[in-house]
Amino acid sequence: MAEYLFLVGMSGAGRSTAAATLEDRGWFVIDNLPPALLGKVAELANQPTGEYQLVCLVAGRGGYEALADLRPAIASLRASGARVRMLFLDAPDEVLVRRFEANRRRHPVEVEDGGVLEAIREERELLEGLREDADVVIDTGDLNVHQLRDRVIEVVDHGGGEGMETTVISFGFKHGLPLDVDLVFDCRFLPNPHWVPGLRPLTGLDDEVKKFVMSDPQATELLSRLDALFDLVLPAYAREGKSYLSVAMGCTGGRHRSVVLAEELGELMRHHGFQPRVHHRDIAR
Image (cartoon, rainbow, N blue to C red; front, side, top):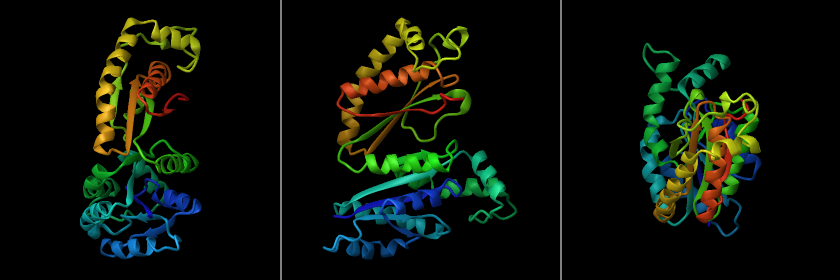
């Protein structure tokens, strides 16, 4: 049976790059297909020839009037037993504004007497329901073209099997909350290695920093309580049919405490039978 990926997201967040990446990897990419024709595409994809087994449908490029019909069409396709995922690309408003100003492009959402920011906010409201339905959200605000391609490949290639895909992200609160996470934990209550001269230039991947952070009883207590929490919620999310779960651990700068705890959290999740990918968003800042 064919596999379907709906590629949705904010204008300027990288849909064209993501679509090109998928096309390069053998996906049959269709741009702005009217939802009423989705059934015809499914018939074509399910032909015995198997020519169109990987189908990507890009939605939202100027086709906002059809978005109201897209959610029930996706639900109907899922009900047929087909493998269906939705990938939503997002970025902070200020990043999208800078991208439109740099490219001197007109925003596809028409706003009377409004600028780019107002158009972005209007589009965000139009896409709110689809973002809520998405299996995974990628925040492209800090990604260049090559990093976005790698992230899309990671999501698509590792998300094709059965079971719930998990990701752990470390970040710094001063650089902003990640947009693409389900659970956020704050470890700023722990002593900060930044204020230890010998540890400041290091990161949470260095043994000296790890020993410093984990020597505090509060760190081990935090992990113990997270272990009990995840013992409850991870199987529950999997039973509910959640395809992706992303967990973020934050400290002030995203270089020390959150990195250590994200690595420890990844190991904890492995003990619960999951294989998370661990990513350190701000470690190089």
